[in-house]
Length: 131
Image (tube, rainbow, N blue to C red):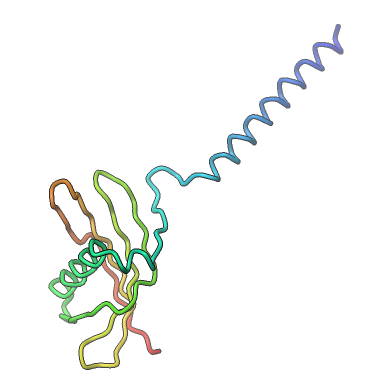
């Protein structure tokens, strides 16, 4: 009788571990709720809505940054979106100044509530680089 009891307990423990392993594997296949999700930069760069959000973000950077850099986006390096009570759009954009060879990596986070036509710049970082 003791052997049956021990075997049954081992069976339950093994079943629980196996079920938990399956759960963990299933979670890895799906993004974490609330996390930023990578978007296709090439598709996004052609999307007028994305271009509008990037232009808005860069215009706001120009207003807020004490260097008053007039930045023009030339290439979208990465794009991630996070669904919150709206959408946070995080862009890494290669930019340049007009009539200049100076290049910048600019990270901008633009928050959008499309149903209210609300857009705001939440965060930005500018890093100059030599190519």
